[in-house]
Length: 113
Figure 1 (cartoon, rainbow, N blue to C red):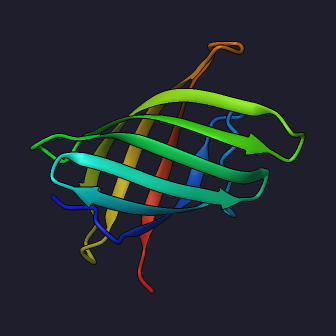
Figure 2: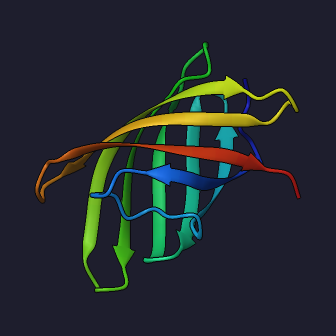
């Protein structure tokens, strides 16, 4: 599975998360290395970097600046699901780092532009 040049939008998130339906992720992939820029909703600017596994799972670290001017960081494991229309849905298990270390889950879906 290759995520290069795909765009994703959040469709669900735990209450302790900051990603919302207004947050858009733009993925890039070179080999196993995955990066993304994201923004929208309460997130002014964010980046993630990680690894794409052969089965399509993603393991990454993320960091962003929210509208309160806070720098937030965490780690995530995303498991892909192929939707009937061929788009990718990612089921994410994430954890904040450095702050409250709470955990949550979110879902992002590929946006067809």
